[in-house]
Structures are given as structure tokens and as C-alpha cells.
Length: 271
Ligand code: ARG
Image (cartoon, rainbow, N blue to C red; front, side, top):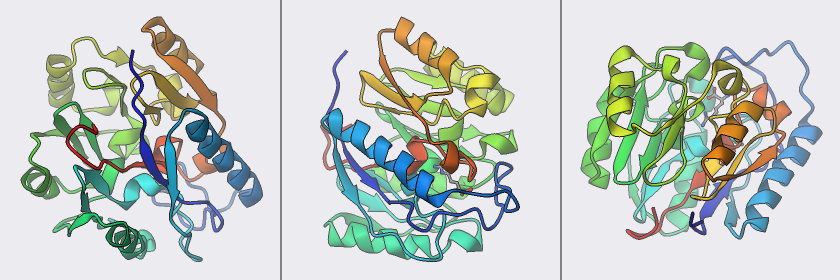
């Protein structure tokens, strides 16, 4: 299995907190250790560097506790960057911060016309754009994504509020393979997934509940939460090398490794 070198955008969780609840994992009354969140995030960044990936960083903004979840900052494919529009007002100001970063980095910018939470809901799998809807990203945004990026968009209906973003319910392992939690999807979307990915890895609820599917693969190495032991074993059976990381503090906001990681794709060859 070939690993591809990747370029990621991350945001240090300097101002991380759980001050509001916009998903079922968030409990503003239970304590959060921001220093521990930073240390866990630094370990994730080190794992990427050790794998030979490039990590770019965006400066965190005070008062935006969820800005650490860089996957929600945009969708970047073939040098084009689609900015985001959040469902919830608490996260609205993250969108211009990420847009400014993409502009400064020289990406061709596109503005979302509808709610669109970036790579939280939009995942490139080979030549297909899998696009989640049901909780955050609006279905209407899927048509715009297809128009901007020129990849066929496959709509995925999410049905379980705990798996509110596509990247909590499905992970792309390589150009042909995904892993997912079937029951996080509507019956029709499950049928589509079976048709498109007959060899997919099926995750269990136990693995999904520790954000096992919120993982980052370079085609060979899969970085996933250390707690997702069952999924890791299945992936190793398929020939992937798994690397477990502990992001227990960020999980209190409903996020895992993939949420902290936005893929920056420069060109056609860079899937
Ligand atoms: N608290 C954040 C929210 O609910 C978590 C975002 C996680 N990001 C992700 N890509 N799934 O919006």
C-alpha cells in the first residue's frame, strides 16, 4: 500500500473550551483541561510530521473555542478552496478567519451559498465527493460543490445526532476504500454505500462512539483514536498500519483527529 505525502492545516487549541452545546457530546458544565488539549494536539501534529506530512498552522482566535477543528474551515481540492458557512452562530466567525488564511496561501476562493461545514461533511473518495447532510451542511450546498469542484457529489443522509458530521461516521482509507458505521446513515444511503464500496470496512457502534471513524489515512497509515481498538484491528487485517492517538479532551467538544485536520490539495494528482 502506498502512502502519499500530504499537506494539512491545523489550529492549536489555545482557546479551546466547551462553552456551548451544539452537538450531543458537548456538556458546558463539565470541566475541560485546555493545557491537556494542547498537549494531545501537539502529539497529533508530531505523528503527522513523523509520517512525513507537512503541517501548516492557522493562528487561533480568542473567543472561538471550536476553531481547533480545522476540518470545518473549508474544502480544498485541486487548488480551489470553498469557504464555509456554519449552521450555528457560535462558530460563524471562524469562517472569515479560515477564508483569510486560504486567500493568503494563494488558493482560488469560492463562497458558499448555503450552510457548508467543509471537510466535516465533504470527503473526497477517489473521484467522488461524498457529502453529508441531515444535521449541518445543507443539501442545497451539494449542488454548488459539484459545480465548483467538478467531481460527482454523492449525498449521504446522516440520521444519528451523535454522528452529526460525515467525518464522524465515515472515513476514507484510500481511493477505493472507506470505513463507516452503517446505522449512522439512512437506509437509502446505506444502499448507496454498499453499491459504491462493496469491500468497505464496517465499524461497530463501540468504535464509532470513541470517534474511531474520525481518522486520517494517507493510503497506508491510519491515524485514529487509541480507544478505537476494534476498528484498528480490522484495519490492520486489511494491511493498513494504524497509529493510535489520545484526543480525550477534544472529544468533549465532539471532535477527534480528523476534525483537527484539514487536507490541502493543490493539484489533480494530489488526491
Ligand atoms: N464542537 C464542534 C461542533 O459541534 C465539533 C466539530 C468537529 N469537527 C468535525 N469535523 N467533525 O461543530
